Structure formats: structure tokens, C-alpha cells
Image: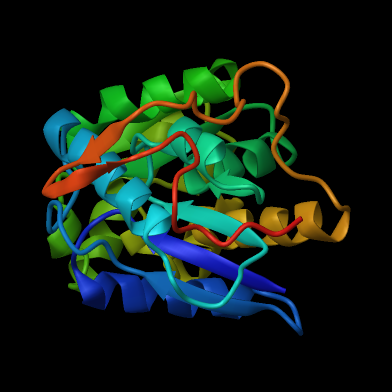
Length: 252
């Protein structure tokens, strides 16, 4: 089984960290390939970055020319593009935001999300609402750290623990890492907090594996039908595109 994991930003070092976490979670026989957008923001923080990132990730997948893959994991917490990618490719698409939330709901009555900057709260809340899991979210709490600040492990852990206490005070019984760049942090903070901490990258990889093994993929009835045939111009690609987007490996 091959899973493609897309970073939501152009920072390759972050892609490498995400892929490391994904490979750690993946079962025997699963190959993980990381993809980094060729254009877009170096870190996704705010609505503008998020929409730009969504277009860049879809462009990345439509022009993909690598080995065929069985599932896509979108490694951008609270970022846009999930629904568009499901129209674009013919394999299961699992977003780390909803994957983490769904698993958290199996572990406790209410969960809390600890993320980066406070400005990301609105996007995350909207994404959880769209995924149907917002009702169980006790709080989304920011650490005050930017995405590119997460490389400082000691600072990140301290900020996470402080924010986690706020989430627990709001009623959270389970915590979710609210950024793909936090992958791996669950192993250290979980013990210190004495509560389950869900990493979205690991959760998405395991759910993607399960969908492939069960022979399930995105429904083409209703919302996620194939894109309507029409001319589409992608940025500098003046040639435009037809109804069937070129690029993504389609497994049938």
C-alpha cells in the first residue's frame, strides 16, 4: 500500500518531520511518500495562507507524476482543500483535522485542540463543524507559537502544556495536536498530562490504511461527484484544463 502525505506549506524540513511521523505510524507493507507544494506559503497561518495552500496542494496532486498511490493524507490542521481534493482523486482522502477529532471522540466525551497561533482557531472550528465533530470539542487553544517556531522542542512543549491545562479546564478529556508540525509531541506530553493525546498525522495514516484495506473510497453520489467538464486555467498554466483533471494516479 502506498500513501501520499501532502504538506500544506513549502517548508521541506516540515515535510520531512511529517513523513517521519507518518512512517512511524504506518503498518508493515505501507509506503509513505511526502509531497511539498512548489508554491504557496512557507507556513499556513490565517485565512489567506490557508486558501492559497489549498490551491497549491490541489495543483500538486493534479500534476503528480510519481508511482500510483492508494490514499492521500492531507497534513494541514484546519486548512482548506479537503473537499476539493476528494473531487479530484479516486482514492480515499483523509484530513488530519477530522481524523484526529474522530479518534478523540472514541477516547473521551469531549476533546480539546491545542494549536499554534490564536488566529487559527476560527479555521479549525469551521473545519471541525464541517466534519461533524465540533459538538464534542470543548476548546481550541493557541500556544502563541508560530508554525516555524515549533522547531524549538523545549519551548514548544512548555507552551503546549500551558495551553493543555486551559483545554482541560474547559472540559477536555482528550487532547489533539492542532498542527502537523507538532507530530511526535504526543509521546512526551501525554505522560506528563496523564491523558490521551492524539496526533492527527498518525490518526490519518491509520484511518487511510483501514479504508484501503476495507476497499472503501470517496462516494461519487452527491457532494463529491467528479468536477464538471469545463475549461480550467491553473495560474500560469495558460493551456487550462478540461473536466478530467490530469495528474493524480487513479486506481480502480
